[in-house]
Amino acid sequence: MRFDFASDNVAGMAPEALAALVRHNDGFARAYGGDDPAARAAELIRVRLDADVEVRFVFSGTAANAIALSMLAFPFEAVLAHHAAHVCTDETGAPGFFGQGVGLIGLPGPSGKIDTRALEAALGEPDMGHRQPAAALSLTQATEYGAVYEEAELAALTGPAKARGMGVHLDGARLANAAAAGFDLKAIGGLGIDVLVMGGAKAGGLCTEALVLFDRSLARRIDNRLKQAGQMASKGRFLSAPFLGLLEDGAWERHAAHANAMARRLAEGVADRTPYALGHPVEANAVFVRMSEAAHRRLNAAGWACHRFDDGSVRFVCSWATTAEAVDELIEALTTLC
Image (cartoon, rainbow, N blue to C red; front, side, top):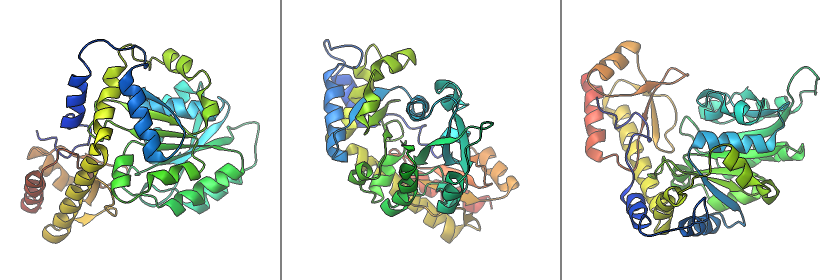
């Protein structure tokens, strides 16, 4: 079975990340996140964001998202998010677990982007003693359907939320792909984002995500929170070093640009050479294709691993390691199996 396009999690570590891991394995270093690679990576993140933020490195995006949301809502409150967002569909209730009962309220919108009218309607809901009121907004950049919010689109969502005193979380598991598509990372600080999860794993890192706190008041006892959650690594340099390797010479952005380019190549091939239709605009590194169940089964049987999403389309994801040859082979398989 070929897993090239099953996810951007299936690729190994990018060479820059792996080299940094090996390099920082030598000798001795401070434990529990006090290592030099963590300090240097955090500073490079501050430079990219042009913001004075607090940064911690954790084991997974699920933990990072859930811990972030637990900072923004009480257990008797809820978080507004797109109904297809990772926090709603793929984290097995982790926000509620880490938040000791925090709820999720799903909102609609095309290609994973929250519709502004749906948000306004949700914000206009009266508080009632029998349900969890919304206390925070969670956004995803790029979205689960590969769409990239423009700065103005994010502002149209964060503005009303902040005006009502809500916290805002940004899931940036594929933030590198959004940046490579033209999104300005320096805009995040002016949008009222309180907590950003900056993705490393999907960008070619190990399994590390950066928990980035724009609201520094949330950093009070953050290390205690992470320790209790099992997210403070004793040998923390092995989380931070691969991230540092990606950031040092721009590999984080460079590899994302390559993944995006491979997705465009695949999308063009699907549109030009196969009978299948694209399910969503291709703006980052994911391609969604409308195909029948029978065609999907034939593709799987031919050895191509790919998954059907909630909207009925089949997802193909490109990574830093995707080659043009592999893309062309997949296009040929789609053409042959139609």
